[in-house]
Each structure stands twice: as C-alpha cells, then as structure tokens.
Image 1 (cartoon, helix red, strand yellow):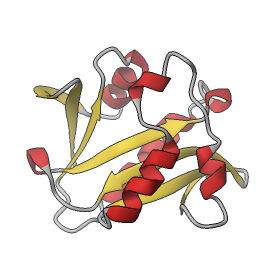
Image 2 (cartoon, rainbow, N blue to C red):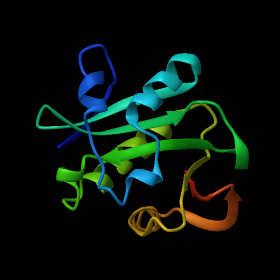
Image 3 (cartoon, rainbow, N blue to C red):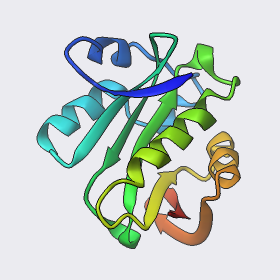
Image 4 (cartoon, helix red, strand yellow):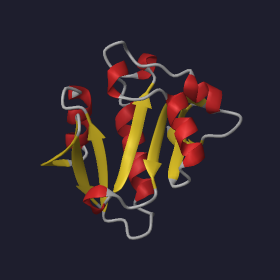
Length: 145
C-alpha cells in the first residue's frame, strides 16, 4: 500500500538518498534541491512516498494556481530499485486525489521532458492530455479534475 506523508526532520534524509537511473538523472532536480526550494517557496508541498514503512519515492507540488490555470506537480520520482512495480502509478493516483482537495481544483498539470517516454506513458494512462503546451525544454500535460 502506498502512502503520502509530509517530508519531516525524520524522513528528509531518506528522501535525499533516493536515486534515479543514470538515464533519468537529467529529467529532474535532485530531491535535496526540491527540499531547499520548498523552504523558500511556502506554496510548495513535499511528500515522501511510503510503502511498507519505507521511503520509496518523493513528490513536490504547488498549492497555488499557475500557468494553464492549474496546480502543478513539479517533481515525482520513485527510487530506481523500486521502479517497474506499479508504485509510480499508485503514487500518482494518491497525489491526484490529494490535489483534488485544493481550493478551486479543476486542473492538474505536470511537465516533463519529451524524451522521458516512461513519464509520457504513465501520465497518458492516467488521463493527462497533451494540448501542445511547451515551457522551455518541457512539455506540459493536463488532467481535468
């Protein structure tokens, strides 16, 4: 079972120790960077993705409406040794459910590099749609909630 829990003094280091494959490292910032960013941007929410009382992933999303009139998931990752077991899908479903509770939530947006085919397949399978929105090196897909 997957749980999303706040990143705290007790689990932040475990979040920082999560790793991606060499091929995935260019797709997102290190978790330590995200944790530092959230310290200075209070609208950002950090969650440790837990499975069987172990930190297996990390997510950061914004609680303020932004571009495309949506709430953005900035980062989501599953540790490389846990990938390929459906954890990412379950984690995304949990994040979506949590974000549906945000004020005036009608759209969730996630950005990713077009060459990240695993992300593309995952988001498409969850109902995110590509409307052609591009921001720098990233494409943005939307889920109407």
